[in-house]
Image (cartoon, rainbow, N blue to C red):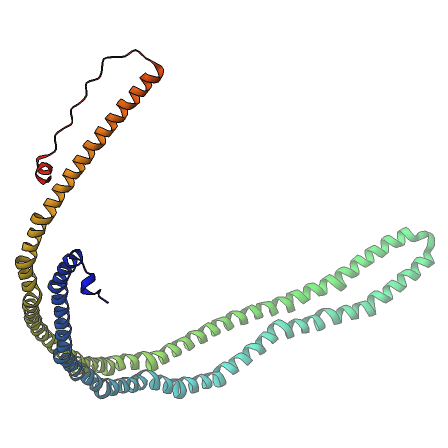
Length: 394
């Protein structure tokens, strides 16, 4: 609330009037400019930015989203399904059929017809050569003659020799030598000679036969393995390599070229064309936006200059500059000059008071102490008052 008019002094009016002038000159144009800018921004948003955003959204939906959805649904999805079917038909179904109808029956036939009988024959031959022959040789060539020799020759001979030794008694040395000679003779002709005959006519021919059989059996096994490897190699070449080469040359190469042509024609070229058109449209939109932006900038510049710059410049030149000069020349400089004169007068008065105080103190000291009097110090005459103060005295 403002004070009543009869309570306001000249100082209050003197301060309030420049404040009101400053408020009227500075605050009101700024508020007007702010209202204009806010109204212009709202108008720009409603009339330019919102329609431009809707247009760009519609343009993006028309040029990007709808073609991309159509491309995905009408081209890429059928192409992917076709490629999946083609890959399954080329890389999965033939090999599954080959393994199920060719390799598996051939493997079962080879196992049941060739490998199983061959394994049985090899097992029988190994059992015959390394088990049955040596067992029969041990049983009928060494163990049976040894048992017969021990039972019917050595045991009765030992019993007879023991009885003879008991009967002879003192002539044991002669009998012992005769017995040793007899045992040597019997061992030579009853043990060593049969063993030599057994080795010469039984074991050595059997070993040579076994070695010959093993050598020829190894040759036969090597020939069988080579034939089996040749058959497997021919089968692999006939059933795998040649069909795979034919499939690569006659099916996969033309199919790959067709797929590359389809991808290039249906995907790459449309995408390149669409990207080129979108780039050209974006370039044109960018140029149009540049024109609009420059025009809008010029309009805002003109609006800002006419709404803010021109009134401020006019206010500065017409009101603020004369007001500032008046305040500087008529108020500030005289007030500054008067303040300097008052300060100078005050300093002179203080200096005179200090001088009088020093003189009084010196006189009191002389009267109390009684010091010899000295030559009186020259008293400085007081300076004359400034001309301005002399003029202002009544």
